[in-house]
Length: 191
Image (tube, rainbow, N blue to C red; front, side, top):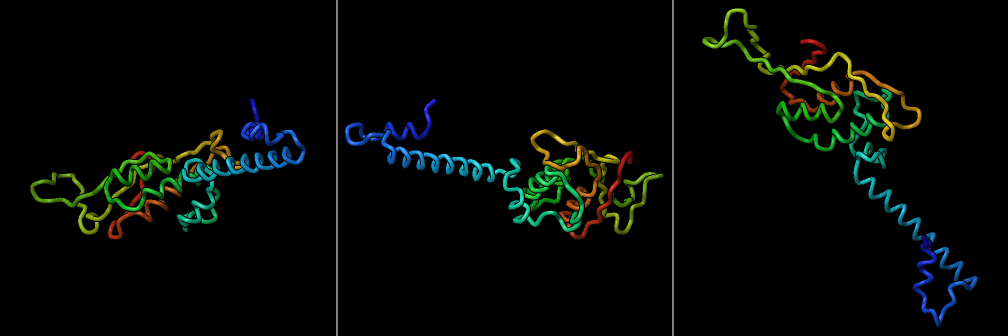
């Protein structure tokens, strides 16, 4: 395999320049090194465009105001930080069940959502809950008792724990994104 410097030497006019001359050769080597460095830096910049690559994570967090205020001081793995960035990018709008289920999935949680409706004459049966008052505005996120995030090769940083468990990130993000007039409840385990 030829180096970039060798390829640059081949571009010189053969009659006018001697590519092996000491000063010209040193100049070509320096130019080739600068071009190799620029190519490597361009690759890093390109990877930074995609938040799931983990490149430029601190910049993504700065732009998206992460970590969320309710998670400040809580240790997060590199993988969880990347998930937080990814989940916040498309999370600008939406109030449907599929939106919140997809948002939770992007954070690494598998959930279902239960909505409540008040009892109505002709529809409700004996034994059905009444659900009057503010129950029109309540909804419950059903999640596993504990969600465990395991370390993965290539997505885990030095010093990250091998596993992290908890649902605080789910409660924090959904609490931020819920409609203002709604009452968000969380149910863990069998509901």
